[in-house]
Amino acid sequence: MNDQEAATGNTGTAAATRTEAEIQAWLISNIAALVEIDPANIDIKKPLEYYGMDSMQAMHLSGDLADWVGRQLSPTVVWDYPTIELLASHLAKNEEHETSSAYVDGNQEL
Image (cartoon, rainbow, N blue to C red; front, side, top):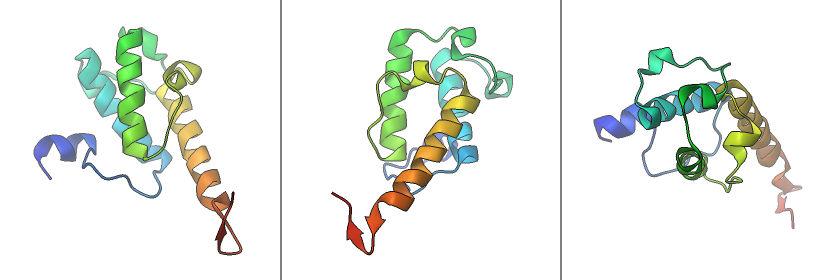
């Protein structure tokens, strides 16, 4: 793992489950890089528009986030959940739901 992978959590492999805290940390790091500000200046309760994120950056973030969590996400997920706090909570809850409902009696749901 190189320094950038360690800083952003991008190791090329998706973990089975991401916690809300892990998702928040990833979002803070990646949003700060996209809008070129210090991660310490990111407030998870402020709308991403506050940081000047444009639609192209949001689409890029959505794609990278989908790769990192290892599942498809709506390209508009960043706008649907406009703060880091809301987005991380949504993704963590959906991750738990998908993990818990993926198998029933040892058989994959159809």
